[in-house]
Length: 191
Image 1 (cartoon, rainbow, N blue to C red):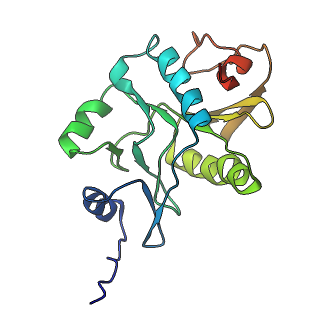
Image 2 (cartoon, helix red, strand yellow; image 1 turned 180 degrees about the vertical axis):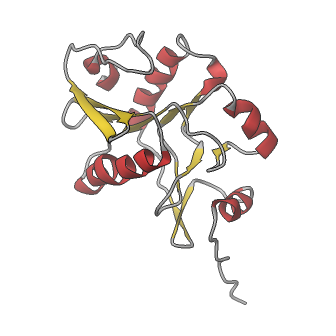
Image 3 (cartoon, helix red, strand yellow; image 1 turned 90 degrees about the vertical axis):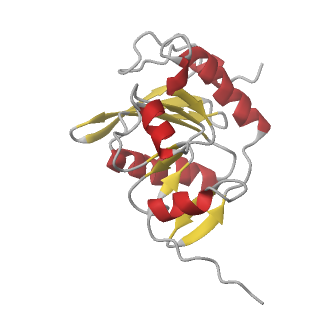
């Protein structure tokens, strides 16, 4: 007997299904699309940022991979490589019973994506996710691109995201986190 995959239309449908799913999925046009595991190098870069953010905000506000964020458009959710939450988010997620930010919650303070090699990954992080995070009202979106050796900081203005690119020994400047301590090359390095 062949069992049909459930048709999932909303982020709430996705969350209900995600409770029993193995792995990470994005809900795209009603279908669950399994996300491949992150590369070890990109995971290490995200963890370096996690360590730096722990000195700037409460540790409960810093989430490495695995946090689902509801967003407008398709797919209906994303899993950033790192997310900095608002102070109220941890309690809201405890009440929800899942590591997820719904559309009813305020957007996170910041999301970070580490670009993997390949044209499709570049397009997704620089264009698709940028548009979706902007539409969601996420105050800052950082793109760490080890392939081209740059960190792009996108900060939300009434006109949309303002983009500033940092390379080499430039200290990355953040409107939300003015005490950010790392240079671009340190954020991109593996060692």
